[in-house]
Image (cartoon, rainbow, N blue to C red; front, side, top):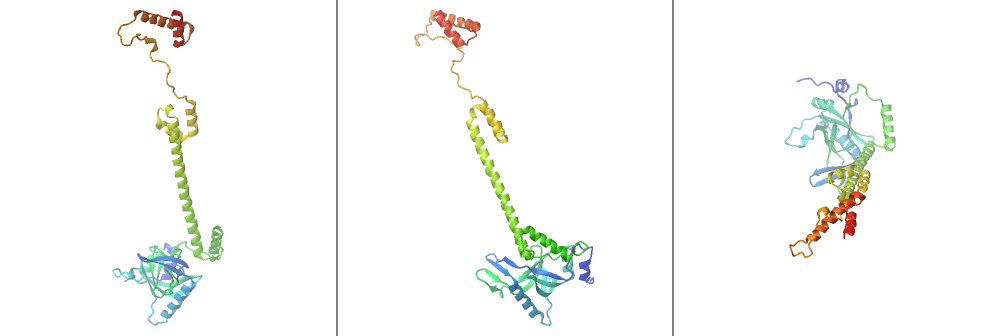
Length: 333
């Protein structure tokens, strides 16, 4: 069995992709109100405040006073709560403390647990609280007062909890630089420089929600504008349908540049029904009696004479055929 490599060396190993805190302390739970689904029909709101954390620290100290106390288990993905899965330890919480309004614990990692955390396989802790000893606060709200164990996870329910490790950069960030960065972030988010971390998380989430809603509003406005343009074009096509030979091309032109397309359609004169008879040059005067098939030769001859004279007048005087016909009819009787 390979010997256990000291964890302190792992924390300082430049080859490790992630870096653990040098003092071995990790945030177990941040302050805030968090909803947990105890079962498919039971939703609870956990109130994690200084009173809750102080009670947990006190209970831990009482348990740690026993000679056989080995610490609280840290497993993988809460497998120890499932009888069908292995309950291998990733580490043990050996100390518990209240720091800056949050719950912190010192963890002694197993060899495999250290590899999982330093290697970046797991980035967060997920604490498990005792429901039976929780303080009821009315309705579905309760305040946990006892920490049972914790599990390594990559999907923590307690949003805002600090990661177990930071990306290794070769050197630890200077506390003054971290404080300056927090102050700059507080100014951007319009928070006080001493605001707890959870307020930073809540404000960022609020801004993200606003951005998501703004994008949804913009998409809805665009949809309404497109619908309005489509209805307007339909009305334009109906209004000018007697001038349009290709409705599809007309629709494309209207959608691309309605003002220009309407200008063109307005300049086009709609066709009007003809008031003259077709093929008038070849028209004949009907017989006096529609019921007879006899043809009045004299009338037919007179009509031919008028037609010929009308053609001559039209050619000489440049008038239209209707005017020429009338002049010829007056002239020849």
